[in-house]
Length: 387
Image (tube, rainbow, N blue to C red; front, side, top):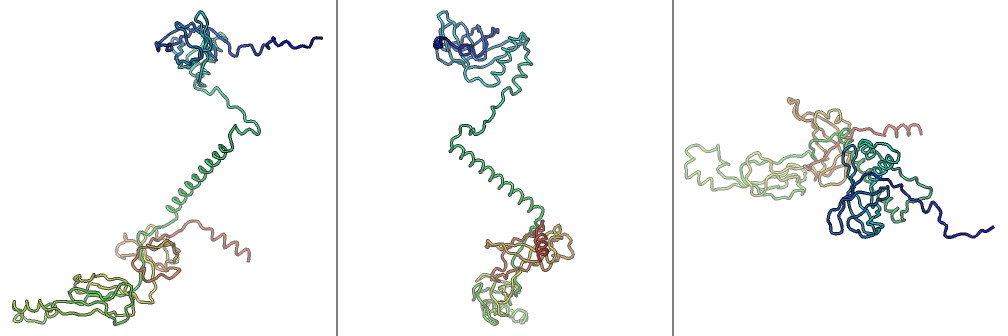
């Protein structure tokens, strides 16, 4: 038995065509070698390519652009294509292969060719339906297949996914915090550090000259400032009409009397309300004094809509202007700013958990009352069960 292999024998599956060719009335319009528009009729057509007799020879291996035109239901259907010349025969017959066809274009060609082979009549509705649906399925993933991605590509993909996840979590946290702040946190309309103190007023009209700096200690009886006033203002009410001649008035107006403002208590100067050299009327406050042992509190204003959230005993968070830390305190009293005006705000007094320096008197404060869900009851329950 001769077992020698005949190398000249070609297996049928290697020689058979990949796509069936059919003769469908089709025109092709393309740009020739000199960029002139050529229009020819196709000899045959398949899903992989076509052939026609060119009026002018084309360059083998060159890629051209054109437009295929079909007639379906007396309607024209155009398809823009790119094709490569694969063979050029002596009689002008040119064989071409499609290049860079889209999935919809491949589906339309298959529909036309299959219907022609089956003897069916193709309608424009069939072609449009084919173009609208997805005719290709994704390939199945095999086990251990990484899609041909390199290690750096996988690392980059994981990093990008992690970045998107972090941004999503941050966005969710921001939205959740905003919703919680809007529905479960009561914000004060205003607030400041309040320290009980006393004011030193101007005894007469005149100018003020300070003798002590703000924040300095002012023992009882210590001079705070000197003032000067006109002698005419001092004697006003003590002179009759006979003593108020123009010459006498001019003389008294030119004379000045000086005096001194003293501290009424063992205090610290919190504010100087009248600048040096400035004129002040009688009764105007010049200095704001704070006792040395005074305890600073917080005064804040809330609206009536927050009535249930600012009851005495409620806990609040506050931050003093100029500080980064958030402090805690407890509301000790609440009252209306004006008992005759029901539309006025509610004023509350807050006692801080930690003592505040009296030097912070007058600073603005941001106050928030949190009345949202709490897990304190769960902690208390667990502690009680442990005991």
